[in-house]
Amino acid sequence: MSAHAYIQYSDVPDSLIASSRQRVDDNGSVKLISFDGCPLVGQIGELSNGRLQVEFPWPRARELRHALDDWMNYHGINYTVVM
Image 1 (cartoon, rainbow, N blue to C red):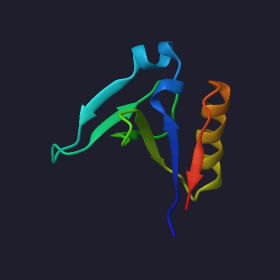
Image 2 (tube, rainbow, N blue to C red):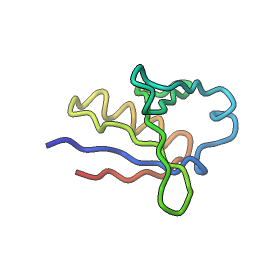
Image 3 (cartoon, one colour):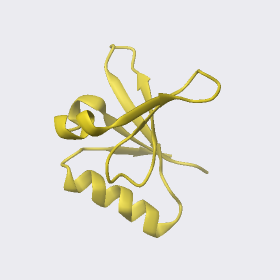
Image 4 (tube, rainbow, N blue to C red):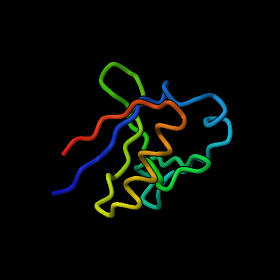
């Protein structure tokens, strides 16, 4: 079973957005984003209401999972994990 963590793009601090790097994957269908200090690359998607969200894989490895959780908590970003 795999899980994913979701954040609202609007919850990301402006300083992180300004320093983020965005690109489209090799297939040209998925927009990816990396934030300074974040251990994983996220995928940007649009919700039906037009708002943007970022999806991260929720790691099985404890150290990586804790690093992602710590990064989001440090920046005050609320997130939801869905299995």
